[in-house]
Image 1 (tube, helix red, strand yellow):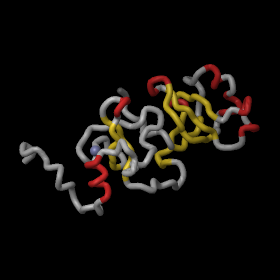
Image 2: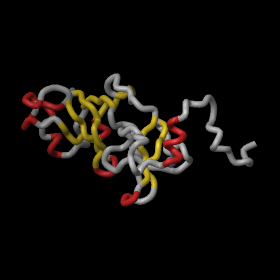
Image 3: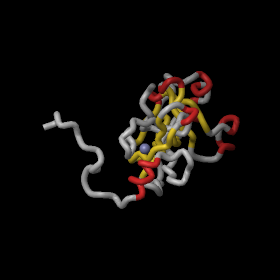
Image 4: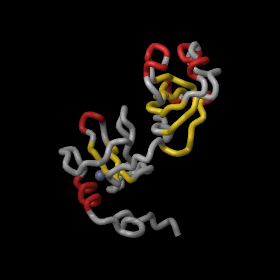
Length: 164
Ligand SMILES: [Zn+2]
């Protein structure tokens, strides 16, 4: 499975349209130079779905979202907007879809508080906060997430003795 894209939520600018799908290239004159926000990753990661800034009536067919090849985009480093997650922990899933357990995951990590390797939601990525109240919540994560943040590494996760 491909890594979750860190590009989602980034601001980007259409600087070229050489590699993008024909439907996008056809409107190059209108789309070039436009800015927007990456809202999804398409085609096994080769394309970004860019939601353009501005009003839909300014755009061809009123379409705000365009698939654009990464090589045609200038992706800015800063996440779009000042939005800061209200909760410290993201929602990560373990096990199979059918009875996936919801774990608490620190931002930009792929291991939950309880030490499980977790993955983002299939469609939404890491955008959802961990909710201790849901029935599928991992009890260990609920417990750890409710504690006040302790300074330093978590005591429960002791490193392997081999790391001297
Ligand atoms: Zn957990």
